[in-house]
Image 1 (tube, rainbow, N blue to C red):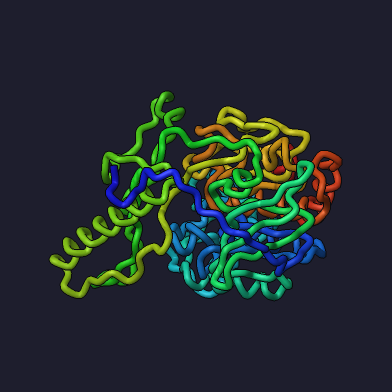
Image 2: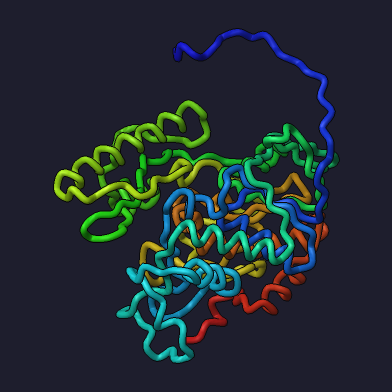
Length: 412
């Protein structure tokens, strides 16, 4: 047993009175791309929005985690499938700087005749710090209240509704009360705290140690430790690369996460020494400031979508996403994957929506986070009771924003 752990069963009790410091129409937990999209979407619908972010920069894995590739908005055959905020945030990510390694030039004209499987997909590389600042300024412009260095540590629930989030920050413990809540934590933390049904990613995460370095070749991203292939895909013949270490990580245990971060630092240091030996000018420029964990816990929602449901039409679709790993597949995103069956005023967006392990690897990435974030944020602004909500209202508003709901609407 870890020498720092205790087997004592004594309880420590305190009489706490938690002040309600912030009130809003919509409270968004998590400031990754899904949280950015959800907060922006709700604010543009006229809602008063509070965004709670445990770190001190927006973007989550995309920025603090240095996973700086805004993956495709297209199907790989010349058809754009993700629109509205998914496209707006892609363009925002390179509004200050683009390194040119991936480009969307052929997507920025009205000429669609030169888009095919022979062309680059609709994706970009971006600078993490500039994207985070650009997103922050955009949210502030829309009136979103951002609370940095804060995280939800509890939720009060009455009659199937969250009445407040209990938040920890430098000021101590306080409460945020809203009409509706959006879980963009990436780990379904709010769902778990509120007693909603959740499910775990069974196979765990491989170690990743992406970092930026600079030397004779300039400023470069070194993506050490690629993402894994879900077991469901391995059964179909897909093969992943050899992991950096044999251990896998759930991403939900403090000691385990700490060990993972330490191991990733070991990998970065070792790689730096190797590169510096070959190039004396080489030095590390930026390392991730959050664990590079992909899949942990998700909502076990009203509907669980599977990887084999590409090209299927859903009557409650709130947008579409493509498969970043290969050309062809298109998935309509059912609204029923964005909420569970117990909590009436809780929506979910980002990498913890209701999908199988096989589809999780698709839905966790930036464009999908933007698509689900926009839909969840807008829904939270419209209703505080999912059980009495007609999805047609949400769909109508999304269409007004330029979202295409069904594959049949895409031009050939």
